[in-house]
Length: 233
Image (cartoon, rainbow, N blue to C red):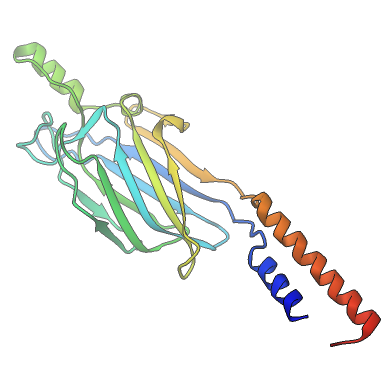
């Protein structure tokens, strides 16, 4: 009987757990400026009405067609904007090196979070330019203006961003990693913004989990029949 109980416990441990769906709403907003800080805005709002999940880590990679312009001496054009954060209560901290600048700069930034739960919006600000080389003269000035002022369409066509999210159960544990390539997203576009929603539907269990669960139910049924016929052990 102890053997049957052990099998039943094992099956229950592997029983399928239906994950509640979540969404991460992302918006990039171009902020125009004249010879100064333009600070494009990147906003991420986590939506999980069930309250079961929290974001413990997020990695954001800027598309290869764009560069960060974080200083007035960097590789970008015209306006610039240093990296700044709008935590929103998410309890954020940078994991690893901060962003670089220019074509060869670091395009990926990773955060850890302690309280990125349903309804919280986390964001950061930094100017984004196109990764292009402009000639001198009047033609070069026109090139710089276009490279500095990326429209929503330009932001997406030049790579947008790829996002990797680590989602954990409230209180920690059960971490799962989801990667959303920019090329596979549906984008909403306007002249100054680009937005998308990274979403995970309700998950279904693996076939192995179904088998283990069915085995556990059969064992439970057998145990009950045994008790009826022979009395409790």
